[in-house]
Image (cartoon, rainbow, N blue to C red; front, top):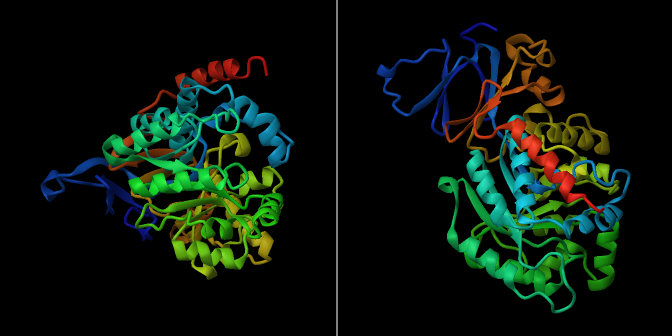
Length: 420
């Protein structure tokens, strides 16, 4: 591609580029001089062999579940939860959570993600890891003790701890915040659901829940309450508006159009997690066209590595595009530009990809194939900039030692599964 050629959208570009704090300025010749007045320049990129995009945003994760990667293969969701995940989580500790979260952060950075909306136990062990790694996140913690010890046995210490974390405010110069997690309508009664909602409203924080992931969940909720999950949550006053802090609803694979309108009315973020849902044979996936028609704010998430095997949101974006086309018999749904905008929605940061990677060729006239090649084929993530600061440089993560992180994860996993 000629040095002076440039193609620019709001989410990607190819050119010699200067990375500023929180922004990118195009330089056709790749050059920069201090005399031009750009005093906030952090780094300079030679864009001749790189493709620059907004960073990927992962809106539903369970970061410490890197410890559970490839666990319970061949099981449906409820069997997987009850025989593989819940029993091991009875043994999880703050130290194990920290190690798993650090490994997840390393994988996120190496694959071009700079944000995670997380849901897991011991949030006070996760948020500092994200802050230290240089990325952004909202770390949502539960309000009840885990594992549960029976009716009325919860002493309130978990709720009190989360309340304290929320009161402390953000970490990493505002990059990482705390939020509130309520697992699902089938694991939380109305009191627990509203306890979480009230706490999030009190602090103006994000509220995070799994909704309508399986047909059984939907059928059981209707049998018990006479309403489907999102209808039920709406009826008890669970949802927070974005002015109050906002609500994240993960999965939404089995929702009615009425429920979609409820999500839109509350401004809720519905998170599409197609890989996890397919791997666990959930049988249904979010209808992106119907969500768009209803005016719902859709985001993408990998779910945890236990059910996805990957924290790579670029791959999730590919799967999202393909399954929507497949399910709706329409090859025009989620074209590369729209898919990339969905995967990077809300991003404040930038990453670069290696266009000399054979998977990125041929570029096409004026680079018109680059985005499609990146989405459907892949490329190596070279640089990651968060708020203009180098988190990854020339293919090496600066904030984490990937080899040590991997070795620590191996040691932790051996201890975690001992006796199981």
